[in-house]
Image 1 (cartoon, one colour):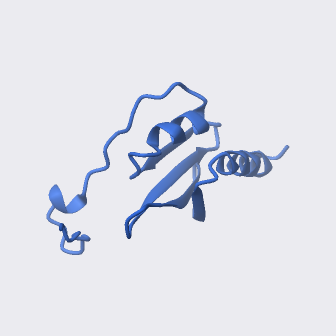
Image 2 (cartoon, rainbow, N blue to C red):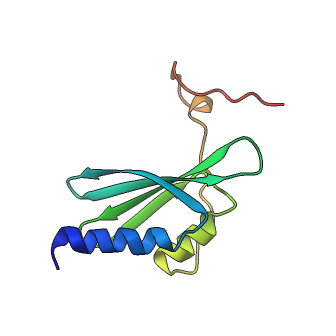
Length: 105
């Protein structure tokens, strides 16, 4: 199987394990590709999911979803889970002019 076909198969198999993620886009880079998607929430927001597929077979991910983080880990890696690493808001840690500022109510 060619490297691309193998990577394509891995992406399809992994994304199909996560029915609550609405897959959106991907980008290719030298070492593999990154797939992005969205998880609906009960409020007006969505949580993001980014999954990195490395050409050497490794898979890594990050998400803003505390609710689904452990499940994503288990489904993607088959592991027992390590808990959620909290996503931090950029505007709370960096002076970035074009950061999104959420209205807190």
